Amino acid sequence: MHIAEGILSPTECAVWYAAAAPFVIHGAREVVKQVKDHPENKLLLATAGAFTFVLSAIKLPSVSGSSSHPTGTGVGAVLFKPPVMAFLGMIVLIFQALLLAHGGISTLGANTFSMAIAGPWVGYAFYKLTKKAGGPDALAIFLCMVFADFSTYCVTSFQLAIAFPDPTSGIMGAAGKFLSIFAVTQIPLALAEGVLGILLFRFLAKVAGPQLRKLGVLSGPADDVEQGGTVPAAKVQEGTNV
Image (cartoon, rainbow, N blue to C red; front, side, top):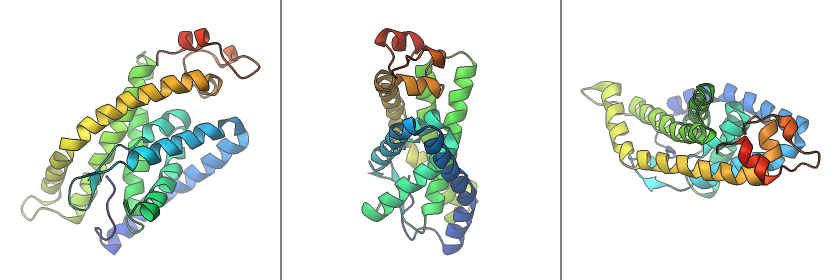
């Protein structure tokens, strides 16, 4: 749901930059802290960033000045919590704007706020609520991925509605129109992203089980991890419902 260059006014761009900046600065500090305190998680950080880059680069034409696509931000939110994704997501958006002409530099603040801030926080909330309710890991991950995507498209719809209010029904009327147009492509994409998230975490459970347990993603105590940094396949399957 990247908003393209030149769609928002300079004032709106400045407002969204200001709104996103505190989250991005805090996220950058969290990334530095994560790398410093847990260098073994560098590859997982890279995986979260790469997954977001690849999925959000798959764009389908949608509302004028925007597009529909998966976001992939739920993975990083589950692994490292939402603040980290504010920074990683902004880096992804910068590269896409410069290399793929997807989004824009003037609209970077707005796109960061919708995809890298609102999306991860909403998705992570559903993840935590599902886990707290005793739901299986697979369901928690599915809901995180789906609602991170849904919330991104909702925020983008309101951003566009603020920029282009309906002459008669105002911002809310315009938001309803944008939401309904986005829904045609975004709902199937979000559901597919949820399934893809489950498959990714099943793979990560096999190749990075110790790190996932230490991060609290896999069910089961972290001290089950063997000294050598690997977990027998039977223990991984036993410790997670992913």
